[in-house]
Image (cartoon, rainbow, N blue to C red; front, side, top):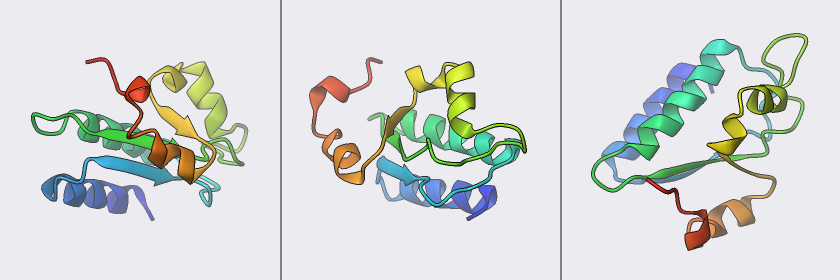
Length: 108
């Protein structure tokens, strides 16, 4: 899936009012700045959708995901402190369960 595909899928989910999204990155091995930017855009679009804010969570972002030949996505999340904004999970069950847990609700 490319960044354009992700953008189209997020727009489709928004139109369908499906605003609780888990983005599984387990099989992603490489992304460039466009792809990383689209992940951030997806989070912003879901989090700000309609009157009721949605939520997007990242599943398995800490694998061998390189944003360039010299780094990993996990490093980018740490360096930019985006891990304080983006909810990340290592297993799908935990990510899905967190939608029902009020302690994981964003404070907007």
